[in-house]
Length: 253
Image (cartoon, rainbow, N blue to C red; front, side):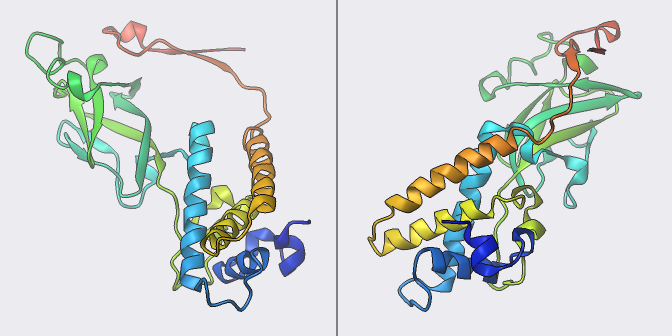
């Protein structure tokens, strides 16, 4: 059976609106005109499918959704030592790393665990130098220890939370709310949402489960090949050192 997006609705998948997606889900579940599952429920199922796809991509390809704090309209970089602790971006989902720039030089910071929160912040245990600064995500805050004694800017690289459709904005598209998942991944969302509709009806979903697995395999293959260019080998020896001379990044072919 060909993908419903291209043949069932007759428009490119990057222009599909939420209203189109609802129609596509109903057609795939054979529930056009049915009141057993409301449109509001279909939107909920679409959002759950979006979240599942988000988790799949984040788990297998950590940098798929990577952002840094300066890209978020609701959070800037952290100016140390004043912003300690700092507030996480409102769309924060998972930290990928933190860079600290002091005097034009950038250092990659190591995270510390909650159990280590007093160890590294105790006087005499570790010097409060730039290269010894560590970070920890706790609740909606990011904490740096030892307390920084110099001025610098910390940049948080993170995965944002999954995008969600607003049921009242049926003209929104996946591309408009989550550009990363709009490149042919719409079919996974439709199939998964249709499965949830049929499960409520206690109908057989085996055929759709097979189609869902096929879509997942295709997505994993496509997502893993987004950049086919030849990469540089990067050696970073700046973590945990105590000397400026040790903090550099060496690029080799």
